[in-house]
Length: 185
Ligand code: HEM
Image (cartoon, rainbow, N blue to C red; front, side):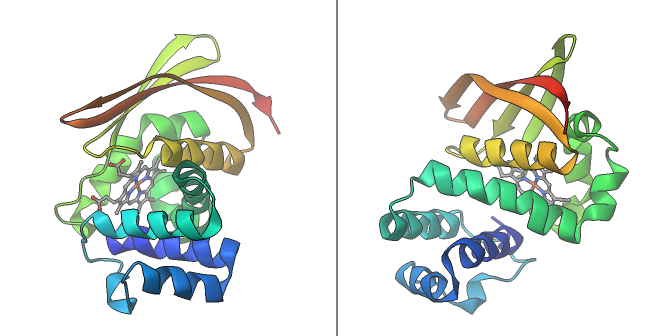
């Protein structure tokens, strides 16, 4: 994944675990500063080894780490550095969810060859939607869950989120989330 993702993960670990622990994790994962160039594309093994080392050292599950990372990515990377792009693609939680593919397409020129996920938002009944997340990767459902909760928090909406089904295949992974709007904060 692009170094932008590494930088955000580094920022999350520094914030939650402290600078000293971060340096230990980075060294144990066999990484150095050259692995954190935002606009360079890296093998996914970099992210996986950082998560693996953090799991071993902290005892937190990979899914817990991914969930925290998703939330952090929204508040500290996406809206902190790309608010213009995000605001252009939605003035509400639901509008932005409906435009995530356009949004990732729009920034593709900054990230040549990247493999963003795709999302499909389907109305089910009043206040209830299904969001289908499709990725060429596997194992990132908890990250998406953190992204969704982080987005709901940003837009001050209360949303109940459950996983309806989760399917692994040779092509990657597809997860169907059910989202029910419960009100505003
Ligand atoms: C403007 C803000 C955003 C930027 C700049 C951005 C950029 C990126 C980049 C560079 C990647 C790595 C892909 C690769 O290297 O192959 C990525 C992956 C991803 N993005 Fe975004 N993104 C943004 C917002 C969002 C939002 C709001 C969501 C969903 C709520 C989202 C969902 C994801 C997911 C789930 C991945 C992991 C890749 C996968 O699932 O296969 N992103 N994004």
